[in-house]
Image (cartoon, rainbow, N blue to C red; front, side, top):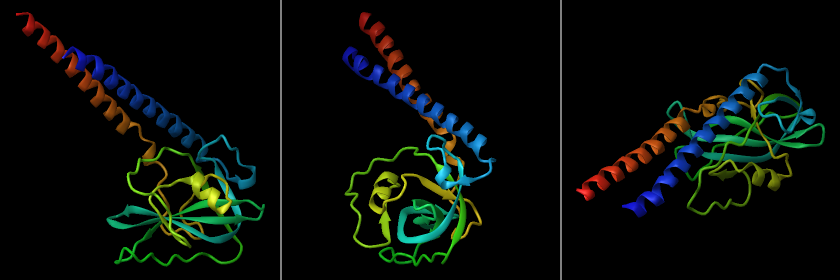
Length: 219
């Protein structure tokens, strides 16, 4: 029993503190979001690399390379987030999230995603990296375009197409946007606080059980 307490009690406290830290990070992001979202957009080439949620304006043409982020659901419909290359007139390439696109009845068949033609101006928000879920299966990508992907690996995606390593979520009603990607719900710290309470609760239960076990053993 003593060995179990010495092993698991510090571990549970560490997990609880980690979730509190993650919650604090989300609150910082939420504050940055509220400060930036009402600002006027700047040209993408003039963006500040250390400011998440900065509104940017891109002027150029959509590229041909598309990533389809799998396993997305909107209003009970399964589909994809469409992340596409945008060739800015500045010479830079960007990855823009065009939002949700419904899937097809046959999973092996990808949907036909059309793009605006010619010169286009779009406004979006630089979305910060908020972590990736671990995967157990092979995360390789198929040859050719479009590519179905399981995780938003921005750096890997940007390296493949020679783009800036930022996800730019296009705002609603922009050319090429069908249903804009969400902007705020992932910033809530409620989930992390709930996890922290669970870990600390388990640590308390373990400590109480150890004390009770000790008294009973003494008797």
